[in-house]
Length: 255
Image (cartoon, rainbow, N blue to C red; front, side, top):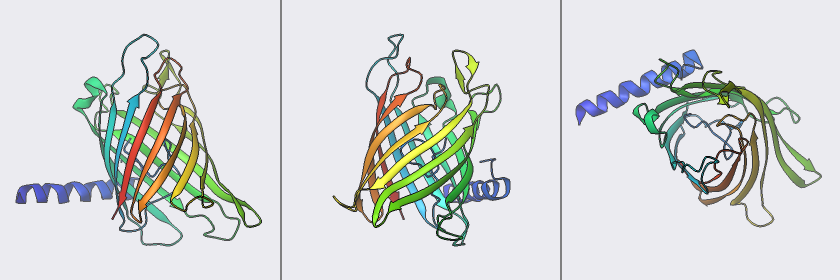
């Protein structure tokens, strides 16, 4: 038990060190909308646990049945500043066949919150995710870099929600479509808390470009069961129409 505690502590120190100093050494799940990374960043010393499931609703175009994908992850806020935040995280993913031999992935993100430097200042974030532990032979080193901006828009006292726009680029040897590289594209999202119904209800439409396995249109909503616990229920429509669509359930807990 003591050896396990020592190992866990060392692993955490290494993760934080690479995340802060390297900003990219570390698909882990960064703070996301439904699918793609958002401009949100975990607050200092806040731990975030996620448990995500992606369940196919049909067969692929070749009539093969895709696996259910599971993701269990942990993210931590690491900067004690109001106008500059950073997070690092790691995940254990399964359902990818042979790639399950290397299930650990890492992520990091740094961002500036909305209105940090004035009323019209947008939220900004840059980061990397899905950095795997098997770079040899290009197996899990997807290395998806991104930048994104987001701003809440209102008409008088009525909120239209937050609109986000960004761009991503990943490993051209792994992000493919029909055997050719398709490793970059847009990140677009609209999200809104439906306070007319309940402050606990949030809805979003989330899009990531390309026809690689990352490209998808995602529709969903979340319900906040407690101050630190929420669940997302969504549907994922992949840009590569040969891939089966999925529904997703994601449970998130902060502590």
